[in-house]
Image 1 (cartoon, helix red, strand yellow):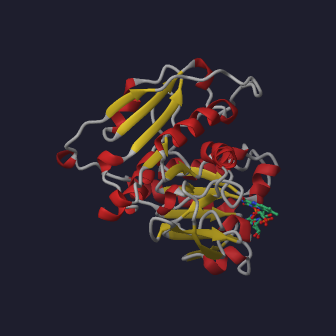
Image 2: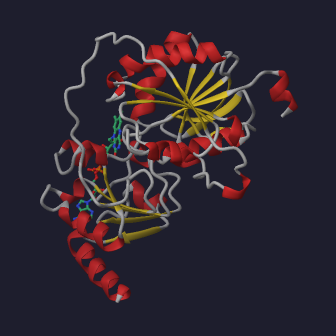
Image 3: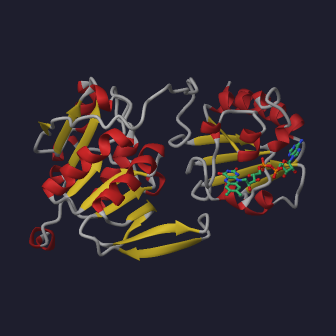
Length: 328
Ligand code: FAD
């Protein structure tokens, strides 16, 4: 802590939210800030949005919360909020700026890095020290330890690599302080057209404890309903391979892997999935992997904790019946 005071370290977390509630990845970023030795009360949060709900403020509970509430920020366009954040970072001399390695963070961080003229380190999975971080490379087949000498360490954080921070309510001595920031003039260089989101009651894919994923082995959109049925039975989230997405079985927000979502559930069930390197890159941190495949030589069968050789069209209905029996 003394080192931090001498070296004037300070941290900013850019909050992902939907104007109503925070994305739970913020709690993984708080754990990350703690690993950088910041106290809870020292963490600064930046929120840009429109008609930002009070629930967001009460969910954060600690530190300084800087808010820019303006219609221009309603849809979080990186082109609208980048200058505001860059000016803010410069004015406060933040030394660490953390964003989630989600679509939101990956969209915004490169613009901030370019405008600040610093490196961006993506998908950080481990904090070694104040300037040394670990990130996966080659689709997770190797890990690079990187030292950042820039004055601002701009990091996107892989939330599955850090625990969800649980507030100890007794330990929070200071309540959060809310500071309003003035919006800046719109650049009008990008426009929000529309958002298509999949409406589901199932758990969020990136945070779910159980994920059931289907691949090309399902053969059609109609058959993919079998995956949804098993997920329903288990209270699980649904995932898919890029091949399944490209074939139109499900929309691309279901894609798991190097160019999709990174998941780390307690249980990952891969059905009709061969286990290509790019898919495995997204599931490596799962605690238990179960594979169901007709081909015993498929790569997924080699890395799975439980490999079941069988035809998914027989196995899934049988599994659903057996799980229902266990529930009753
Ligand atoms: P396949 O490889 O065709 O496997 C289908 C499997 O189903 C086979 O193993 C087969 O034995 C089995 N099967 C068939 N019938 C049955 C049955 N009746 N019962 C049981 N099993 C059956 N892929 C991703 O998933 N995520 C990514 O993020 C991703 N990013 C990529 C990025 C790049 C730059 C590139 C080049 C590729 C990327 N890919 C990604 C694609 C990846 O390389 C594979 O092509 C893809 O993962 C294969 O999907 P699949 O396993 O569904 O299909």
